[in-house]
Image 1 (cartoon, one colour):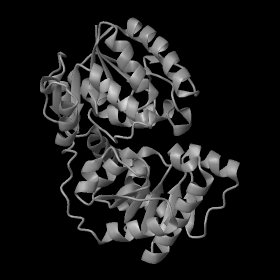
Image 2 (cartoon, rainbow, N blue to C red):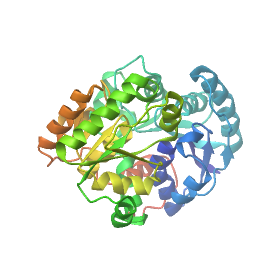
Image 3 (cartoon, helix red, strand yellow):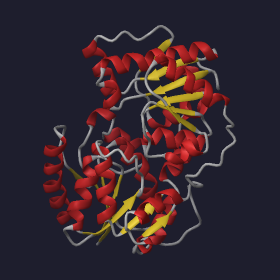
Length: 367
C-alpha cells in the first residue's frame, strides 16, 4: 500500500519536499515519488535526487517544456495515469509550477486526498500564471500546511475552513538546516570563489519577467554593480541556465564589477547565501531562505508572496533601475537585522506527517 505520493518536478519542489520524504523514510511511511519532468534546465535531474539523499523517482513523466496550457493539459493526463499506478491514499503537492496545479486537480478527481505543502502563499498578482498555480491547489486540497499565520489568514479569508489548515512553518528551513549540516561547508565554497564572509553581494535572478526583457535585465545588473561599488562589496552572480541562455541570445554584456559563475548546487548556494552581506533576487524561495539565515534581501519585483519578509524589514521590493536597486540595497543594509524568522524552527516536515492519516512511527525529531 502506498500511503503518500509526492508529485514534484522542479528543483525547488524537490528541495522543499525532500525533508518530508526523508521523514517518511525515518518513520516507516510507505511513499512514492512522481517526477513530472518540468524545467529540466533548472538542474532537476538524477544527480539532484542523489545530492538530496533521495532514491530515484518511482514514476518519471517526460513532459518537457511548452506553453502553460499545453504543459498543464499533458501533465493532467500523465499524473492521473501515474496516480492510478501508484494508488496512494494522499497525493502531496508543493510550489507554484504547472505540475502543482495539474497534480492537485488530477488527485482531487480521483480517490486520493490532496495535501498542499506551502499553502496560502499569495502575491495577489492575478496576471501571473504562478499565482493561479498557488491558489487553485489550495482550494481543492483536503490538508493545507501553511508556513505562517499570515498564510493561514489568507486561506480563511478565501473561505477555506480552518479545520483543514495546519500552520507548520516552512520546509525551506528544514531543507536549509539539512543542506548546511551535510554540505561542503562555508569555507570550502568561499575559498573556491575567492570570497570572504559578509564581503559580497549575491545575485540570484532568473524569473522570466526579468531575464526575458533585455532592458530590464541590463538595468538590474547595472544596479547590482552600482550597489556593490557603493558598499565596497564584491558582486557574485551564479547564473541560472535560463538566464545564461537569455544573456547569450541578447549578447548582453555583464557590467564591470559583476562576476558571473556557473549555477551552484543547492548546498553550495545555501552556504553562499548564508555568507553574503545582502542578496538581490526575484525568487520567492530565496526571500524565505535569506530571512531564515538572517541575510538582508532586495527583491526585484513589484510584489511578493512572502510579505512576512517585508513586514519585519528583512526584505525590500525594488524596481530594476540602477538607482532604485542601489538605494534599496543601502536601505536594507541600514535596517535592523535582528528579526525573528516567521518561517519556523526546522520541524515542519515532522508536523506535516503528524497531521496526515499515515501509519508513521513517532520518533524523536531528527533534522
